[in-house]
Image (cartoon, rainbow, N blue to C red):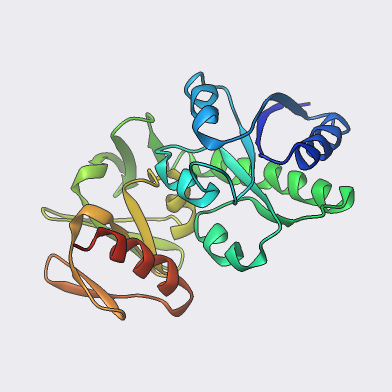
Length: 238
C-alpha cells in the first residue's frame, strides 16, 4: 500500500489532536509533524518528502490561503476550517478537499480517499506534460516533446480536450485538460482567471473587473473567479 507523508498546520491544540487521531486510524497516512503556524511549517516542507498538508485557514502570522500562494510547488492540500466562506477560493487553489469543523471521521475519510484520485490524475498526465520541478516543462505536440520555460508562457487557453499555450514567439497545442496543467504550473507564477484561461501573473499588462490584458489581448475574468482574481490584482496596485 502506498504511503502518503503528511503534516498538520493548526494553531488550535484540540483541533490538531482530533486530526492526529484521525490520521492514526488511516493506514496509508503517515503523520510527520504538527505545526502551530505556517511559517514554522516551511522548514518541514523544505526538507521535502511531504505529500499532503492538512491546513487551517485562520492561522497566526500567515493565513492559510496566503500560505498556499507562497508555495511554488505545493503538496496536495486539504483545508480544515470553521469558515465556509473561503471554500470557493480554496478550490480555485486546487485543494483536494475543504473540511468544515467540527470534522466527522467519515467526512475526513472521504477527503483523504480523494487524494488517491488526485495522485492518479497527475501520474496519468505525466507522459503528456513532463517537468523537472525547476523552470520548464516538456509539451507533447506534433509528435515531439517541446521544451517550454514557465517564464515564456503568456497564457493558456482550454479547447475542451486540448489546450493552446501562447508565448510571445509561438503557440503550441497539446492534448491536455486545463485542470491538469493547472496542477503542474507553479502557483506563485500563474493564475486561473476563467474556466478556459490560465495566465502568467507577470504578463498582465492591464486589467478591469471584467478582463485582464496580456500582449494586447483582453481575456475574460470568469464570474466564479472574479473575487480571487481581483483580490490578487488589487494587492499589486499602487
